[in-house]
Structure formats: structure tokens, C-alpha cells
Amino acid sequence: MAGRDQGNPLRQALWPLALLYGAAAALRNWTFDAGLRRAHHLRVPVVSIGNLTVGGTGKTPTVAFAAALAHARGRRPGVLARGYGRAAGAELNDEGAMLQRRLPWLLQQQDPDRVAAGERLVARGADYVLLDDGFQHRRLHRDLDVLCLDAELPFGNGLCLPAGDLREFRSGLRRAGMVLLTRAGGLAPAALTERIARIRELSGRRDLPVYACEHGPSDVLLQPRGEVVALDALAGRRAVLLSAIARPASFRATATALGVEVVAEHRHRDHHRFTEAEIADAAAAARAADAILLTTEKDDARLGAAVVDRHVLRVELRFLGEPPTAAEWLL
Image 1 (cartoon, rainbow, N blue to C red):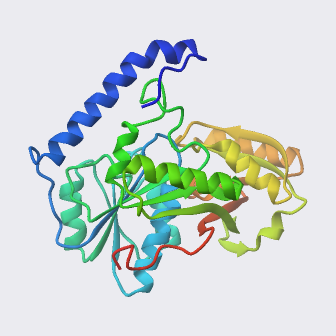
Image 2 (image 1 turned 90 degrees about the vertical axis):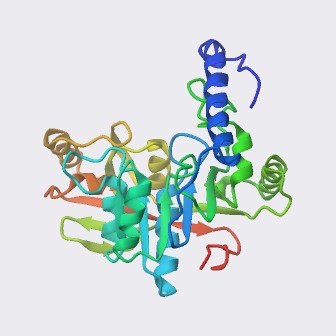
């Protein structure tokens, strides 16, 4: 773990708590590594996709990529998730609903007890399980740990919660079987090479597979009629942005890069469930500005049956070189 953050008094004050948090996580991991606590096995391959930090590192597009790859190779993939932020009575949270819209054939189970939910998923016919946000969930055995790290700040400020973004010490990197450096498109080649070397050094594995990727826009979904159009439909358009995601600034930057003139933003905290009034306010702001209402695919899943006209920007995982082979995905 990095040393104390001298530049921020609050983080400096929270540093002892961060050390305790990381130590507790390390102790818990040790109990599994030492065999003092048993991980439960499913009878099919389990691939965990997670991260070391809180906030968005592109896990959901990675899950979608891996699920589509498995489906294309004749497997019946299923996604297992905790279901954080799921509305009362709903089967899926926003990420799950988004995945279901894009991949209608996908099997899903969401439950804090991912061991029991995993058994149910296999019973429904899944023969390849993706454990979403599962890097710190040690109760369920995984055959591969895929770790998503932000290429620019892979470890945040180097401190654990609550002083930083890390869920555990950087030494947790040693459990990874594959690392995806997300949002790597903005790094110069030399910086990317240096970042990959540093990650391999911290993992203790010179042969650790590390792949650079980014989450690029793919197309635009026109709701509520469900028509899909090309990205150039956004060029030169004025837009009001509506989002409730971990990195709204990234959404704005992507929209701007596509030629959108952002006239206003309606930002909410991550996983926020929009009220009818909030949706109506955003739509009214767009009409008043002679603009379109632009949102993300994840946010659109929360809008449900809302009848307001909106443009939905969809993204996909793209590798900046050769992607991992099917065998590396255990396919």
C-alpha cells in the first residue's frame, strides 16, 4: 500500500482506518488461501470479473463481451451477481436489466448468497458461469479471476477505504489470472508498456496476461421505439445528458468526442433510481433547449417503460491489440 497522502488532510487522518481495512481484507483472504475457510465449487467453469477499487472500471461491458464469446462458441453462459441497487421485488438490478436487453438468451441470478444462486444458475442449464464483481467474493471457487483495472489510475491513490478507493491491498493482484487495463486508449504507448510492466511486477508474475482495452461507443438506441442507428446520428446535435453512473464525466467526454454539444447535465449518484419527476424534468429541459435527451445504456435500464423520447449511447469492449484467446477465457 502507498504511504500517507500528505497532500490531503482528510485522507491523512483516515490513513490508520485504511490500514485497518486493508489488514482485515488481507486476513480474510489468508483464511481462504490457507484452507481455513472452504470455497464452494460449481460443476461448471466459473470466471470471476472484478476489480481492486470501488467505482466503475468497465466490468459490465467485460461481462457482456465474455458472455457473447461463450454463446458464440456454443455454450450456455450465465451471470451471477449480488444484485446491488436492485429495486424491491425486481429480479435484476440496472446492470442485469441492461445485459438482458442486449443478450436476451443470457441466464442470470442475483442474490447476496452467490453460492446458492450459482447452484440455481447451473440447475437452469448454465454451463459457463460469469461471477460479476466477484474478485473479493471468496466463498465461491472460481477457475479464473479476471481483474479490470483503470489504465490511468489502476490503484486510485494507493490507499484502501475509507481514505482511498482500494477494496484491499494491491497485493491482491497476485490472485489475478488475467488483467484487463480498461480505458487505455488515452495512454501513450511508452506509458502503457510501463504500466503493464509495473502490474506484472506487483503480481509477482512476469507471464501474467495483461491486455489493454477501452470501452468505445458502438451505436445509438432510439427509445422508446427501439430503433438502433449509427453513431453519426449524434454529430452536431445539442443534448441534455441524464446519468446516474460512477463516472459521469467520462460519459460527457464520450458524447463531446462524438460531436455532441452538451447544453446541460442531470447527474445523479451511481445506481440512483429515477423518479417520474426527475425523468420529466430532464425531458422538459431537453425540449426547452431544442436538444435531445441523451443517456447511457445502463441508465436506460432504470428508465423502464418511460415514454419520453431519448437517445441511448451504447458502448462495447474493444481491445487495443490482439484480444485474449478463447482458451484464456476457459472456452
